Length: 562
Image 1 (cartoon, helix red, strand yellow):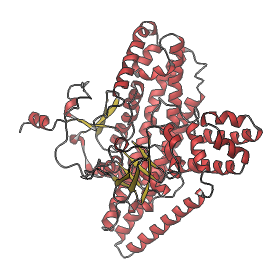
Image 2 (cartoon, helix red, strand yellow):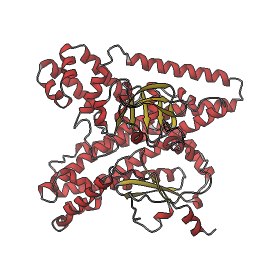
Image 3 (cartoon, one colour):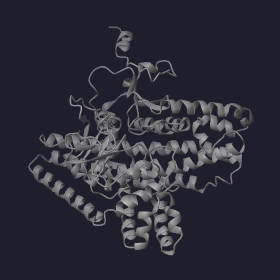
Image 4 (spheres, helix red, strand yellow):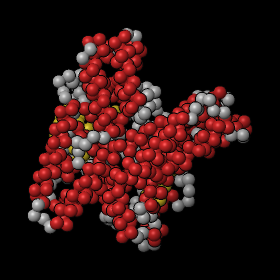
């Protein structure tokens, strides 16, 4: 069969309700995946520019620094983000790449503390100290231009850390499976949890605030009874409330520079603290729970599991024990750093870029080029630069028309299920190299098939079995309907969702694998999780009682919503 005929044979059928016009020749020959794990919702044009030119450019640069000759390509199709990874086999030197990654695994914590984090902090200071509102138009445009290479470098650092940290966890899990052939798929991760991290620090800080609120009848009543949208103003209206508000603002300054998802289009917590207040209220509904004791027990269990593993290995050859200890230490460090780097990069840097975009939007509204500030997110980066530049008068004439058309496209497809894949399906067995196995653990292998209509299959995310009522969350704001003991169902979760894990009984996600954020944090909280269940958010409905089997990756519908 000719190469052209083979491509046609493996071409993925395009759904009738999701027409595709490929922007570049040859796109249809590549294998495109909707990035449902990170961007399940429609992406605005400005966000797409950022992802393409900084985030995924950072992946490519970091991978090549480690001798992995891949290029990440992005396409904006019907408002959704699709990604293709192209590997240049001619440049592949497996031994050289393996050596570079091994060294990176060994040095990742030192590199983070000594080089990468200080550099990130310098970039954050650059953005923090720039007075957006006081800048002249020329200064604002210059600041936007100067911010782009900085942001690209920040995301390059993200992946310079991400690749070795996740690889260490993945390789430890692989080694554990070889040494304990009868172990469950999640057992290795029980040796990695219970460490302090920025993610858990945020949850613990908020938990302590909930204990402070419970100790005060005034604050407790106010937070429990006042509508969330009015709670901040109500706190400011009384002396005791103002004292508590000072503590709450301290939390927001430390941990509020994060948003709903990896999107700049939605407010961050420091702009709208409603999600924080909702989490605080849920924590207050658990007066007898001791979060600190739970964390201490998890750390103690981890150490017991490590000790048990070492006893099992004491008679193994020294090289085996040495490799186990090396990968264990690296995987534990990688687990911590996986959460910490997101605090600085995914959210803090993104907050400052969001503020920059909003200021650009305000200037364009004042100049009559845009109807609303948020319309700025429907421009590409090139269009934004032109709108702010010397040719702004001529350019702005067609600006709002283009924005309106893009909004119409987003509205048309927001309720359409985007196909998981487009283009041409790869042939043969999936690659079985360390990097590919790592990404499989992050992204998941996709939903499993089931002949039982009452059953959904995904991947084992966190061990345990639990039953509870379903609550589907599309965005973090939907958490207002969540009650303690519910089963949280979402397309995916991000670090800002972490406090919710302290209240729910189990987790189900459409996307992800054992190393996705949802699975890792569910294990930290000791609640069952099934990840990568495919269409859980569409097949399940609020109020249905389901059983979550985190060991097997199976969700069973027990009864319909009452």
